[in-house]
Amino acid sequence: MNTFSRTIALACARCGYYGAAALAAASLLMAAPSADAASSRTDLLSGAGNGWLASSNGVNGWIPAYGPYPNPHTMPNPFLNALGIHAKLMWYWPGPGVPEAGSPPSTAYFRHQLHLEPENGMKPQIVALVAADDEMTLTVNGIPVGTYQLSAHMMPNGQPAAVAIDMTPALRLGDNQIDIRATDNGVYHWVFFDSYNINASPEQVLVQRAPAQISLVGDKDDFHPGDLADTAPRSQHVLDMLGKLAAEPAVDLDQPAHNRSVGLTHEVSVPEGAIITSATVKLHIKMTGAVVDNDIILFNQSNVSDEGQASRVIALHDVLGFPPQAGAIYDLIWNLAKTPLRNVASPIVTGQPDQVVSLLPMLVSDQRLDVLATDGTMVDYSELSVTYTSVSAAPGDLNNDGAVDRADVNILLLGLNTLASGPNDPRDLDRDGRITALDVRKLVANCSHPLCN
Image (tube, rainbow, N blue to C red; front, top):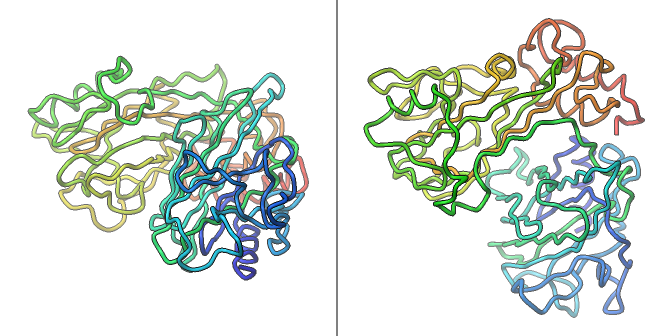
C-alpha cells in the first residue's frame, strides 16, 4: 500500500492530469461540506455522515467507506494543487481488520452528497480524475457522466492512467449525489479511492469555466429510441453523403445501425471577433453492427462518390486508440484540434492514420460540424464544446477568462504538434506556424499564478 501511494503521487507530479494506480483510484477536484476525519468505528474510516459511504449492493447497508484519512503515505502534489493532496483511500469493507486477498464483494458501490453554491452567478466546474481496477461507472444525480476500463487505459509501465471526467453538466446548484459502481475481476475484491482536497474551497481547487459554446444533439437517455430529440438536424452535405452510402435509409439517433448510418449537424456560432482555440465532440455510441472494427466517421470535408466510396474519413480505431468491439458502448472523444484522418475508407483499418490535422479553421469557415457515423455505430447523442478567446485577450489567455493558467495550458496540449490555424492563431505564441512545446513554455512563463494553477 505504501509503495503504491507513493507511486500515484510521484506519477501525478510528473504528468499533471494523469496518474497511476495498482488497484483502483479516483481523484475529485471539488468543494464539499466538511467531513469528519474519522468515525467511532475505527480510525481508518473516512468521515461518517458527510463523507463517502459504501455498500455491497448500492441499495442498503451503507457504511462509511473504509480508508485511512489523512493518508500519511500519499505525498503532496503541488503540480496538481499548490495545497497538496489529502487522500482518502476508500473501499467497501465491513471489517474488522483490513482488506485482504479474496475479500468480498467483487462489485462495490460508493456514494457522496455534495452541496453546490453559485460562484459569480455561475455553477462551478467540477472535474474528476478517475481510474479503476478493473472498471467503474461514475454517475451524478442519476446521470452517467463517465466510465473507466483498466484495459483501455494502461500506461507502458503497466500502471493504470487516470482520466479526467467533467461532472459539471450533470451537477446542479444545491444538493447533488455522486455515485460510483466499481468492479474488480481479480483477486483483491476491493476498491481504492483517492480524493484530494475534497474539503478545500472552490477557488483553491476548481478549474475555471472557460467561455464556451456547447451544442447537444440527442437527449442523453442511454439509447432510448422514439423521442423527438432523436431526429437530428442534418445539413445538405450530410443528406448527400447519406444518399450515396447505401440503399438502406439512414437511421435516427438511438436506433441500431447494422449496415446503416446516422448523420447529424452541429451549428457553430461564436461571438463576433472570437477566435476558436479548441473544440471537442463527445459521442456516446454503441457498436451494433456485426463487423465494427472498420467503422468510420465522415465530416464536413469527407466525400462520398456515387459508388458509395468515402474519402477523407476518421476511423473509430484511431480516435478510441483500439479497435471497437461488437456490442460495446463507448464515450468517444473527438478532438477537432488534433484529428487523425485516413485518405480513404478501407475494409480493414490497420497501421497509423495518413495525417493528423486541426479542423478548427473548418469550424470558422463552415460555421457547422457535420458528423456521420457509418455502417454499425449506434449514436445516443453528440455533444460539441467549442472554446474561444478574443483578439483583445492577453497573450496566452486562450479562453478569455482574464487569466493565464492551467486551463490555457490544457488548450495548448490539445493541439500540440499541429499546424497553427493561421498567422493570428493565439495558440502560436512564438509565431513559427506550429503549436509546439515552445509555445507551452512561453505560456507557462506568463502564467498569472505560481505553478500555473
